[in-house]
Image 1 (tube, helix red, strand yellow):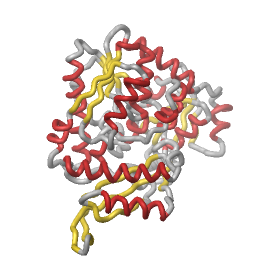
Image 2 (cartoon, rainbow, N blue to C red):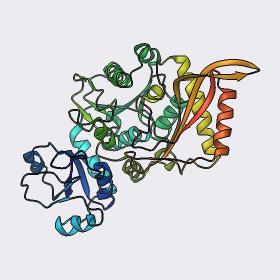
Image 3 (cartoon, helix red, strand yellow):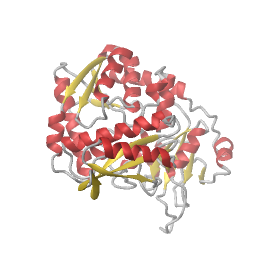
Length: 412
């Protein structure tokens, strides 16, 4: 991109002797560096020194002391107090990481990558895919067709909302595909979270191939992959938290010439800033994040149409009450989870044996770390009463107060 680059060498919480340390998370350091308007990338500590040198960094930050080869640029173990001085004085960083410039540069890069060929975007309606789609649309216009796949795991009323936004707001070529039976059929009986993600990821690609085939020859596929997806998916198993469907779940034979990933190197807050730079309405930019696999990773255990409907209704109630309380802009992400736990309850004087729903609300800047939000007890009580009274098959509501780490934001 022509920007000065700082490489953050992720030593995995160990020093040169292989001893565990309490060093800072490489992702946290990356956010601090970028907040100083300096572009950086995280690489595993096992990366060959020749490969690091080929990246042409102006400096290297190590997360715990570890052995490195000679690169000819300043290298230093992370020091929060001396970070700005190291970047400016030792590395000569001028702070050229600007989101407005990034957007223009990325649009030019996309235009050069695609040329006069056709491209499709797997549009979910979330901020990542929306920003990606708008950026590509700015680059190549009607060469882009957005394909929205209704996999039966969307939030309540979301398919209609996505279509209205894309057709009405952005005047994009838009195709809506009803693939609910196909996805739910392949997920029937599957309970392992990683397997769910792999199935959803591959099925997405196959649906795109089939639908894009109706458009004639299509060469490129747009994805809303963001940097945390890549970092959490790990490299060769190292540093892996979970496989994101658009990283670890892609089949080798995707059937396209290549991928277009406009926000691949951005953290979530940077994606939002890019969206504002593109002129996207704040309401869309600040829309609740939603994972690519949808409710598939919020339904613990087997996925069925009935269980998906149950979660849809519970989640809608929770979101309605958060908005009514005026807290929706203060919370980074909030949603319901349908657990695979049943418990005894009482309804109309009779015993019930129904499902438990968990609620989750977190605050974060980069989605790599997060703090649980202390929601008012009165609000939680109101949500719980509504869910158990209005959603059939649910008799218990619990609230998750776990931070990330040690937990993740999603449960699967």
